[in-house]
Amino acid sequence: MSDDVMAEIHRDYLFNLILKGERDDGRAFDEFRDISIETGVAGMAEGSALVTLGDTQILVGIKIQPGEPFPDTPDVGVIITNTELIPMASPDYEAGPPRETAIEIARVVDRGIRESKAIDLEKLCMVKGEKVWIIFIDIHVLNNGGNIIDAASIGSIAALLSTTLPAERYGLGEDSPLPVRDIPVAVTAIEFGGELLLDPSLEEGKLAGTVYTVITNSDGSISGMQKSG
Image (cartoon, rainbow, N blue to C red; front, side, top):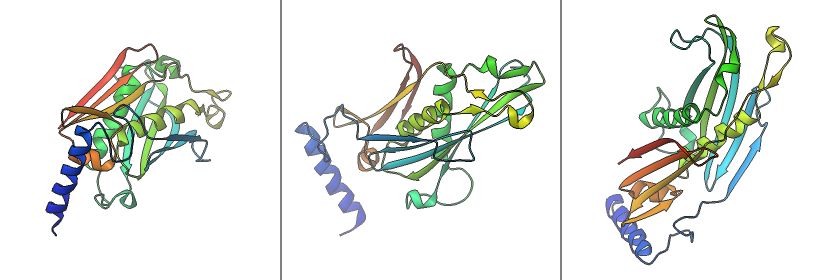
């Protein structure tokens, strides 16, 4: 039996389950998979977190160094977010330049952090126009079990909350916690069979017509939205 036929059979199976108000892993439509978060897992990073969301596993590392600000924002720190899709995470991933999926994940996570003003970037300015702290958020997808964006967002915030500004290393005073002032939360849902399913598994994500991600702040305001498909 061909892969296409098997995929169609599985799609029909999932569709029929949804019509009955069920999912193949037993969750309700508005139910997330189990989440675990472990911080401080990368000793050489300024902050780090390992997040497991169902079968999805994400490692986020934070590196910080002094540098020049962007010309149009001379008095605030810099955030640079990257995502790496490790080949062992999925048979669909290959070594080489960043894929479109990796770029999209980094963009959504980065926008959620910026638009929510989760970090007080003004406090990362040391000398206006000359020296600010540059934050590198490196997201590594260790296993793709679906809904990478939410796991990456959770991991990034958890890593930032555990981050220390390495001032002593650069002769810039005493180390201090990163000024995190909000905790944005990403929630992804797929539209399938006329229903919205939160936290889609890998198989559900493959069959989805439209994928929505909404990022909200601690006060309930929306700091980012993404729609694909």
